[in-house]
Length: 271
Ligand code: IPE
Ligand code: IPE
Ligand code: MG
Image (cartoon, rainbow, N blue to C red):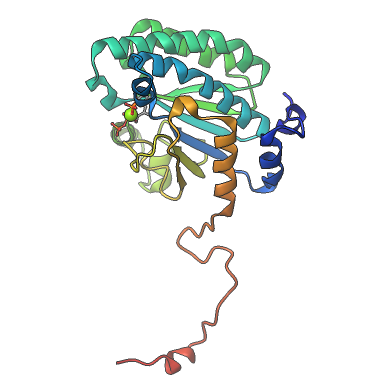
């Protein structure tokens, strides 16, 4: 697959943004809460499903751009365990759109070396969706480029419950050490690095049960753009913003060391 620069002409606005990105400090894993489809449709006096349909193109663009940038993983939140609270008609339509998307995209995923994975309680989905998901996973399993995780019927708490169940099950058969690695290796995302960057569209300042364990130290980026309007430009801006952050993980990060001599204690007045 061609790298991003090979498909951008210098006169395109995204060329300048892409040029500003430091290729050595790209996030390895981006996770996105794709929100705002309903509001997008409402603003246009369209049914909500029109918003979901319009949300497919940004998925394509985002997947393609992440693959061209050479990222390791992209995780997209498509349906939460709480989204079953919505009317049956909307939920049914989402399954149909998902099948359409998977069918249409499989050739591109194969061509672009993308490895598709579905995370969440997939077993509870209607047969026709589950079948299509399993087929896409199988057909792309040998690919070695971008890992594309689609979170469907996903909940961060449900994922932790499933991990704890697996842990208890394994502990009945053998002695296991219970530490962070024991939990992380039983999550749906086992083997994938935690997201470096979490993007949410539509301006909502919440995580809505997404990757609760994995986002402990992710950089957060919220944009008011509604998901159907999310463009390559928005994605590049988010990455540029990420590259300006100073990640410390509780330590000093790469900050220049400051005076830390114990003698300082004597000059700092105490009460
Ligand atoms: C995100 O858009 C897609 C799903 C949750 C399936 P919404 O449907 O939540 O759109 P808003 O938030 O109501 O605008
Ligand atoms: C989060 O969006 C779930 C997905 C994007 C799939 P929601 O629209 O369900 O989240 P809330 O209800 O606004 O928190
Ligand atoms: Mg929403």
